[in-house]
Length: 89
Length: 413
Image (cartoon, rainbow over all chains, first blue to last red; front, top):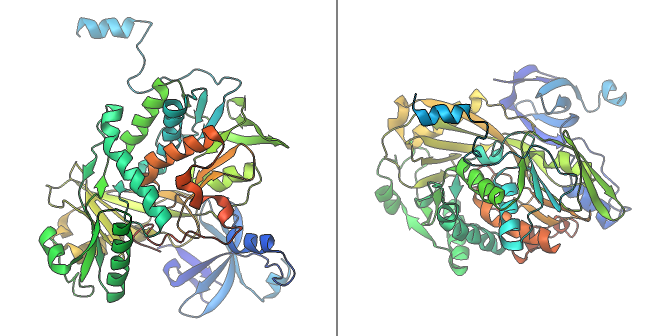
């Protein structure tokens, strides 16, 4: 069983988590044009790399960010969205 | 040692290998470069040569022929999709499949088995009825059948599925078939090779050169090639190649795993799919049960397998077929599925002149091998999208006109 480090609950089986995709800045829907909005809605960075991703620990209701290598499937670190560590990003 | 064998061993002029020639070096220029020698890429090369007379073609493969998703799928062929675009496209593919063994003079073990998509809930029954009606309207042989018909066709199945998912009925698709997947790549490869296309294995594309007029060349680990047309048919590596021409796509990569049991006596004729139990299974000509489930739950660019997958799939198999409890799993593997938001492929011309995509094949690519090759060859030869793939163009996302192929893979999404 693969383990995922939750910033609140420590190492837990990855089956307790839900993956919600890469952290991406949202353009202002009132100001951007249709093309920019479609790009945000549909297009993804599908290439491999070290990515920052949203994850959710279902039993405890914790949203957090994980930095993960998508080739090696290694979680490098995780932190809560609003933590001081996140501010340094 | 027989004299003939000895003479062969000492001879300096060996005959060409049985399936393919291995061209020694890349030419400096080709009319078309196809990236990826899987079923799709080789089929496109085959139809470019056969139907359009374009034979100055190089198919570049970073690994070996058919070593990607062509050799990693569960070989199911069907056309009982849900959208008009999907049904028309896949139905043409089924028609092409049926003649391929004869055309290649190579046994693909194409075997029409019938395909049951089980419904365990009222809402699933409603969806099956919907798919059956769409299929019938478009001339595809599909019907909704009741639980009794399922029990008669698959007498070995526990119709209650261990008591927690009783089968209420199924969508039955008589043309559903399986085939030997490696042979499909070999057949198309040999056919393309005999007609003059070159297949270069262990040749990785490292970059694509473009200027204001579009594609001008391809850089590989074995040198540069000048070309005006590049067809990208690389499934799970699509985002990497698209990045080389600065193209953004909605494609994201999740692994799709599968496994096979040891060979057992023939007992399962049809192909069985259960969306609720996340299982699809058929019995190969060798007697192995070929089994698959849903996509892995998160993005990964790797073909590793997991014990979680094998355990979960085995548990659901036993819900349906408890007598298999002593049968052993002998292999498991994964492929990288290039998923799209609407579960339809992304095919045809792109904003980059001379760069054509045959991608977004997610969990539904193998069955489309012949028709994708045929339509992409047409698209590349005429620099205009084939009518059957108009609904699958990359530009649909910019127009918010998704195809919405919910019948794509019967499980997992």
